[in-house]
Length: 464
Image (cartoon, rainbow, N blue to C red):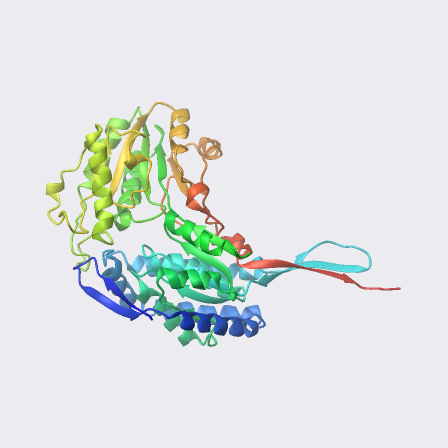
């Protein structure tokens, strides 16, 4: 039997879309079809794959307005901001298309008399992409586009919150002329997704989601020798040094903490400020936060929308209440945000001081519009606190001293180290995490290594 997937919009609580969930036999059929299509697709020359993928990007971006509004209704990000996801999608997709030639080129093993030797990147086969809802196009494109470019087939299972995003991928690929079966969409429940991971046709799994979800995917794949890429959670720290560009640091960090209602794996979730400018920074940060306009995300003046669901907002409320009970102070009056109401996903942003690492808000992922700010007396103290976390996705420093930034960055256990910016993925750089933030890599030339396998060619030219 199959059930029905219902998308409850956080905007107004109504059912925004319904889709039938795939049956087990339908999943098996789709994976078999993908494997058969991939056998032919991998033989298509790379320039032809690139041309098709460029048409795919063109077809997708031509519908940017429709896609942006649909995204707002599915997950609540303000309509003033959702078009930015389409721009980011295009930037990443076009970059990964352009670097594919270099990333997938044969590696010459060097001269050896009488021999020709090289290493070729071979596609894995069928890649199962399990994508998250918070940046549904940016997350999915990181794996989908390079997997297709590398000669794989892709089956995309998107979040139950954003299933229409998967269908927009399918629409654009169909318009671009991708052969049937090379890209498919499946709406699946947890049990059927587990079956898909364990299916012999699945050659690789690219998962983005929670730490608990990552463990579930890893368990499902544990009986098979396949690759599993895991992009999981974060508790990303920032350090503000006394020599920073103060106004830039405040503006950047407020945005890094509260954009998308803080629902980003690489959002800033804790800030350490040098004591020489702590009081001034906290005052400016709180003042900037008070300028947010929380409300209906379909209205152009709104710049802070609801969280994805009430349960997510309640987790942030619980963390905040626990911190306050332990002595933290809240700098934002929730009454200044009339749209913020208990029992709804609408939640005012909050800035906490007098926090420490005994509090969940400084140790556990919040994934919402709350930030704790701590005073530090030195670089040494900042490094120790930044590393005091089970996560390691991104970390950032605000300083005018490039050499100090590099030296401190070498000591931070993280996948990406920023200076004077945050909450951004440069497609030319590897997107990686350490510890509970996951494993594997997407984006950059390095990302192609995880979607292919090396195959060595050892050719003797003369036998006499």
